[in-house]
Image 1 (tube, rainbow, N blue to C red):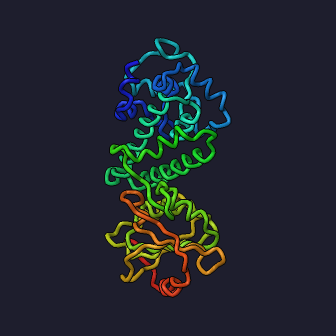
Image 2 (tube, helix red, strand yellow):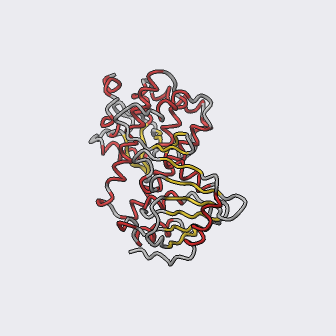
Image 3 (cartoon, helix red, strand yellow):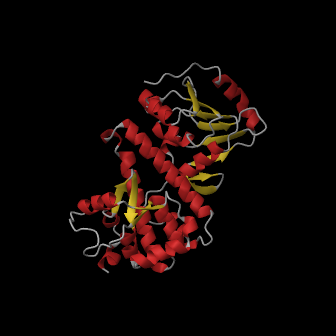
Length: 326
């Protein structure tokens, strides 16, 4: 199969990724071809592990949706003719593709899985780098989906029975073509979005983010916090990285998130996250970089052991004026 020989090129794979019902998907027939299976055999593997594939991982196309994909391939053949089955195909979302990697084993599956991961990764990078080309509302939705996908991947990894192949794919630090999005959290490498999301999810009462450089991603990561948690961002918003329309779009998407802004008044250099301040579950983290740049460069988040030293700092911050967004 020629496609198998060239599948390391993520450009080839990106041609096989379509948008259906607002999400990126791949056809079961294309995935079967990539992995060296027949479509029937691949779908049988899925059926044998059907509990792993919820409707947001894999779903069947309607006739109209399938014809739309055929038109995007510049094909006019009808269902049931040529190489296309008379049966409506299934498609796999990004989460479904990652789950498929846990089902299909072997050296070939590992090699092809790497190429699939890189293709989806490059498409995410394109979304982040194209802020000036698309509307703010669309960007927010795409960023939220990216963060959710990352969390879903972590959950898949945690529940795998056999992790070796997928761990090798996701933690491939040696490939210079793969953009790194990891940081060091308390001495261990963790995917950046997962690190921040895990800290925010642990909050029961409050979250204080002290960071002079904030942006849209700062808000997107905070969506993981419980609706009952009071969130305050302390920042001077240097560079005007976060705008009022960013916050308005976020608030429309997540109206239950209780979020407000206060100034740092120009005296803070480092970044901190304070969880459940002045309670029995209090935790304080020193962050080497802004969360809006999570994973772009090598950085570290370290939990502070002597929290009392920081209480006068936080007490002073709570008296600062409100930060207006432009």
